[in-house]
Image (cartoon, rainbow, N blue to C red; front, side):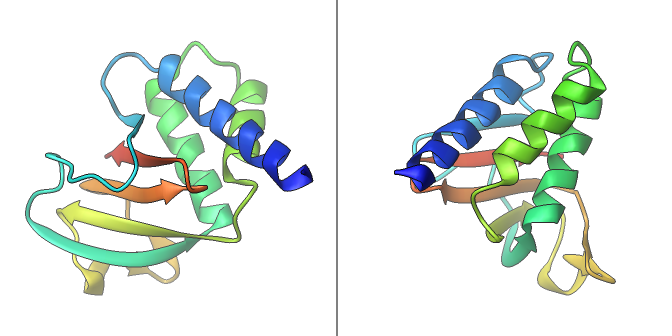
Length: 127
C-alpha cells in the first residue's frame, strides 16, 4: 500500500511538471509502450540513477517551468524520481550508446523515453 502511495505521488509530480510547462512539450506523459513519432534515428538504451533522473527533471523545469519556484521544483523532482533506484532510458536521435554517458553523467540530447514508468505511462523528455 505504501508503495502505491509513493507511485501516485510520483505520477502526480510528473503530471504537474507536464501541465505547468510553457507549452514546448519538453516533458510529457503518454500511453505506455507505444511507438513514438519522436523516436527517429539511432535508438540506444541505458540506465540512469534516481539522482540522474532527479537532476534531469530539475533541468527540464529550469528551462520549461519558469512559473514554479525553486522550492516547488525541488519537491516535484524528488517526488517524481523517488520510487525507483534506476530508470531505463531509450534515447532516440542524436546520441548513441558510446556517447550516452560521459564520466557517469548522461548527456541530455535528442529524445529520452522512459517506457512504462512505474508501470503507468511512457515519459518523454525532448531535449
